[in-house]
Length: 109
Image (tube, rainbow, N blue to C red; front, side):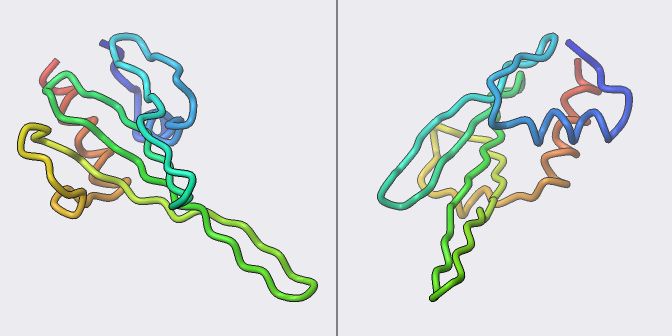
């Protein structure tokens, strides 16, 4: 399993969720679900300990005469138990907690 040299490399790995590129020993991120009606997309990274990181991206649009702006709201989740999974709210995380999780996995392997 690839050991990252520093947090900058770990963050690059985490922020690369839109690409299904594999890193040595790590499963790659993959598009898990997309809901056009809700304008939401979820990417998932399955980790060696059975947990998963999930990134939810929700597209937003603001339109007003002569103004049109698109942006995305991003939410991070660490799902530790898919058998008991019912609601993402139980697994709310942040990019910094996802970074910590990657460090924990690296120490174990």
